[in-house]
Image (tube, rainbow, N blue to C red; front, side, top):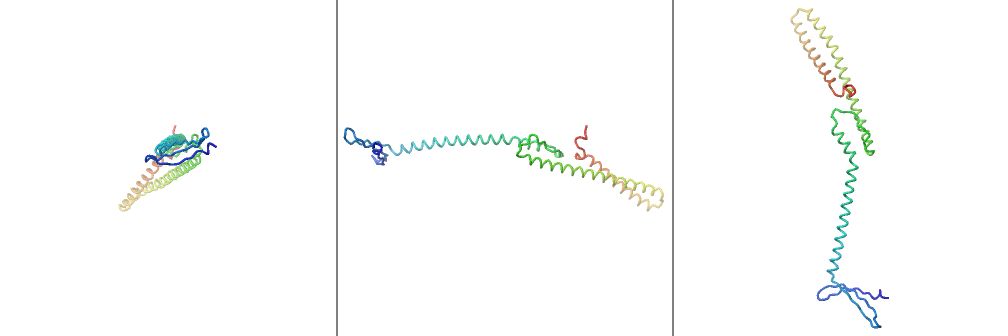
Length: 200
């Protein structure tokens, strides 16, 4: 069999290491051996070139895959970035829920929870404003009555010591009335006291 006639070996020829292949055959009944050799350096250089080509090919493919992944991630994150921009550019006083139309399905539960929190905070702020408004009204009524009684008392008494005490009480009542009026004005000026529908 011709294939069985191949032999491979490393030899040294003129101080060079060669890789030699020999083929044994018969020509006109006479045995013939054909030997071919090449330097190991040339073979190593060929292997190195092949490794370089494969490495460059794999590197280019890896860069293409990374580029496609980056592009895909960028496109996939656009709706989330738009949602972030909407949240960043909202007014600090705005407690209106975020619209859910363009929200990606992956973050839909998160935005719903955030909307629930915003509505809870808005309701709490409105309840606080209503309480402060009522408290200011409740304070103004007795303070006005007290001031009227002190004025009547001041006209009925002639004692200077009593007049001095009444004047101090009137001054204290005026300060309390002024504070209640300021609190009421502040409560009315708070943005949460005026839903958007109040303005025309």
